[in-house]
Image (cartoon, rainbow, N blue to C red; front, side):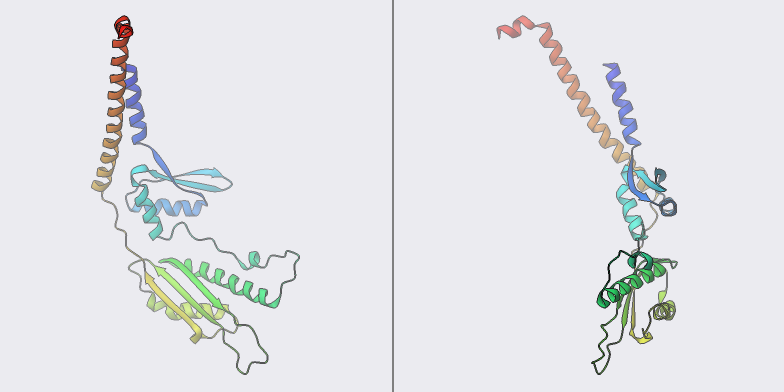
Length: 241
């Protein structure tokens, strides 16, 4: 019985220190960025290599939801984008002009989205480019246009960068005019660092919850052992009944 209680205590201690996988299959740069963000919020995190130059990030179970929300508000993990080389990879098929124009618009959107996402303070960036079909019979050609959506961290004033961002898009797409580029800025939600008291309360709640489960298991086991011993001490009486 003493051995059983010892095992239960060890299991409880190990469970209380359990860590949960947050993200896996990310590169080391993103893993390091996640560690810094979480540590700045007083969330303990660690990274481990998983092979093929990829890493995983783990956090304590009790702060897992907070870690997910914190990284989401920082735009982590970063979106993956397709470059021009990937979109226009040779596959032995001849594409129509319409397909080529659509692939070009998509590739430029991806390239510009990745470039804008690298600006300090940007959480996420999306660029949509419209390249109308060329019609030699039309009296007036429909101009190309682009829309840019940027979500940034609180405390950044991106209105001062409007001209620079529009100029970047205009100079990247042939035939695109400055006035045909629209840009919208949105401020992301703030996320205050987690206090030591909050972390302590969550850890205490997790420990008490696990302790309660262990107590129920121990009591049920003790009851079953007691009942078993009584049945063994009075086998004849039990058989008569």
